[in-house]
Image (cartoon, rainbow over all chains, first blue to last red):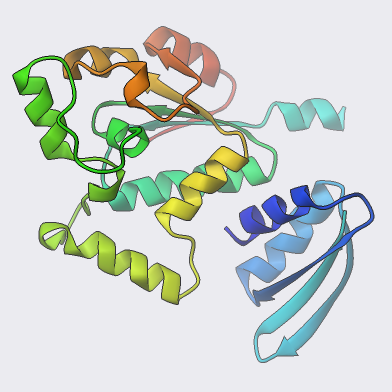
Length: 60
Length: 163
């Protein structure tokens, strides 16, 4: 579901714009960047915010 | 070549159940697949029709008294029961508040996502005849009214699940 939400947000963006996704470690952190790359988006970076919360930056 | 491979990813779901929890499962699978570019077909039949009725509450609908009673009692989207431990309809409401609290998509969010992702929604011709329902009794996003033959055609070369 995290990627579903991510995908819907990405669809609203213009090419070159960047989406910041805050997510938990584990399944979402493994799958969101992977699915984004598979679909032709660029993952600019993954940083730890705190604890098991991460920020993923995805460029359309 | 890669493009051709992507286009062949297809998931078709027969949504027979009108249970709240099973609808959550069906829409989680459907939206998850659609988000990674699967072609997704959802075929709603019998109890599952309650999920996609236009009016979200209970409505006395359908041709004739028995059909009307049946449709009223089975309720609409807002009255989908849990398959177990329903507690007279309290459970789906408690579950929805838990989902919100734990930041998990609610059924409403999932169905909205399904529409946003252009999932193909179909309804069963035979169930509609039995229940005396018409296409206008359903949400306008319903693409078509189908029977088995057409569903088999649409789901061919993909994966099919029955929920």
